[in-house]
Length: 333
Ligand SMILES: O=c1ccn([C@H]2C[C@H](O)[C@@H](COP(=O)(O)O)O2)c(=O)[nH]1
Picture 1 (cartoon, rainbow, N blue to C red):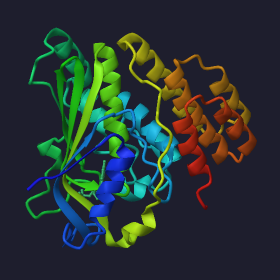
Picture 2: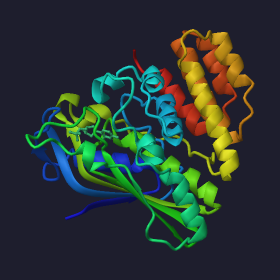
Picture 3: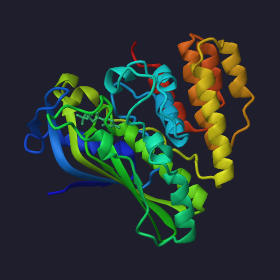
């Protein structure tokens, strides 16, 4: 039977799903390669307003800069590991030590099947908005299925399997299919990743953003992460009023600049003054400029330039991103 939830914000979805793990009869014990879990199967979550994608209730606070870097990395079709690892030094522990990530979502979507699926989806839905045939494929059986003895193909086998896109009533509806989903570490990032792609593509198509539907075949919490109560604070961020919806040429130009900024930040030979000047001189649309500020502020914090980090965040016009960044900065370290 499907377990379903619908909410206005991802934060509310996350809080309600977390509640399931406090109930005795909802989740079951399930072993995994990463240790024992509590699992709920066949979970379908609908986010009514995909722009409300930021989850503030998780403890410890999520790093919004890393989440934004992942979006930029995916949109750019990249699979290199160094830039992401700069924003999240523990990522190799989960996804492998190599110079590239096997399951890189953007690389799968934009190039590894020999077709730029995002670009094709844009053209196909521009030409035929009622199509039911637009699927972004991520899973590649040739390289992702376990071997016959059951051993995994990689440390980083994609958890997102595909995306199903439909334009209905002038809105881009998005269904994201996940085979495996960690409520604590994965879900908050996965919603940001794919609801951002939805918003970006809606801009290219010049349609509104519909709902974001998220299917987790296995939604779980690891025993080693402790009980759910220790990960939970009953708070929410202010609403996110920024938009990532731009016509394609402007969107492409903005993400090119954000990609360059990510690399600039990740280059530890760049001084804090250089990062500060770089972000101060960027000319980006308002929503993208705020993403740039969060990226740069975290890079400045990592360079111990706390004053410059705060100065950059004072320029951020998005109360939601200011809230998320403040929470991340005040996380005990
Ligand atoms: O985008 C991702 C990537 C990974 N995971 C989590 C799900 C699982 O807990 C773990 C992957 O382990 P396997 O399902 O591959 O065993 O990482 C996610 O939730 N989202």
